[in-house]
Amino acid sequence: MSENEIACLYIVATPIGNLADMSQRAIEILQSVDVIAAEDTRHSGFLLQHFAIKTPSVSLHDHNEQQRSETLLTRLQQGESIALISDAGTPLISDPGYKLVSLVREHGIPVIPIPGSCAVIAALSASGLPSDRFSFEGFLPSKQGARLQTLEKLATDTRTLIFYDSPRRLQSTLIDMVTIFGEERRVCLARELTKLHETINTKPLAELLDWVSNDPNQQRGECVLLVEGAKQHQDASEVEVNRVLNLLLKELPVKKAAAITSALLGVSKNNAYDMALKLQHKD
Ligand code: SAM
Image 1: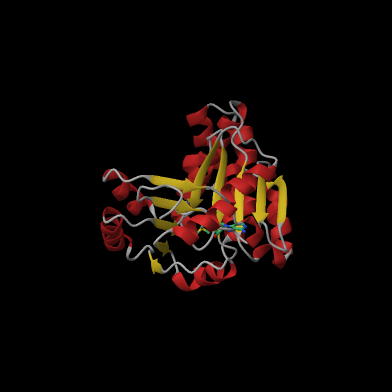
Image 2: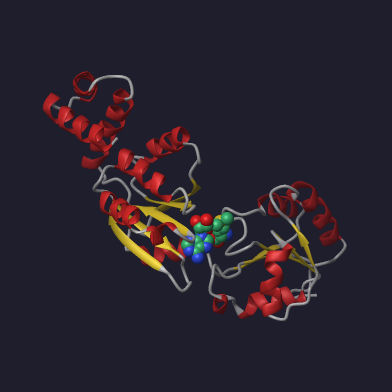
């Protein structure tokens, strides 16, 4: 058995790129448990081989988690110890494992975290954006309508907002962010963390979009986007004006959209008109 005499489930973080980030404790736990539940056993085979870990593994992924969790619970109840790993980083963070952990805890079996790499935390720590309050939002919806709606709900949030994104969608995500958060909101793109081409760049949204659009290399690899929260008062109303204008401009001409926004939110007609023109030129 492992470092602890009672059978338990270990949640083991693995590197997000650089194998030197694997902790000594993670290696020892993976060597000593009876079985490793891995998101993809073939993918993790490379990592386990690198650290001379010979423990057998079984798969636990989005499609078999319910049923596999029951089997693993039985093994824990029989006194075996189990470690859960995902393809990279910390399990359960935009990765499978939630059903297993809640089931195991419901049955009074200890669940022990073995902390380590996690892209959201690594990105936040180096972004230069406020880190005292943040909200991890995972992946945005892939359909544009749903993505805009999600962003709209977050537009006045004052916390730093953190998203995982795929390089294929990065440019569309940034375009939608400019629409909802405005051109000036600061955003950090943290790409290929801990790897050879690691890039961490924080700029106003419009500038970052420009940079990414003109450099195809920035649209490769894995990435995290961090958006500065809305400013406490003043920007919250600006964000609201943008939000209402965006909705109205889908159905109405600029002048009408501006007049309705002005009546609804009490901003001057001229201001609403200027903001509506800006938004329209972005499309
Ligand atoms: N569990 C992982 C963690 O702890 O960060 C996240 C798994 S999630 C399926 C994969 C996403 O995490 C990627 O699409 C990317 O957004 C982010 N990610 C993972 N590794 C990264 C890296 N080295 N650099 C930047 N982002 C990374």
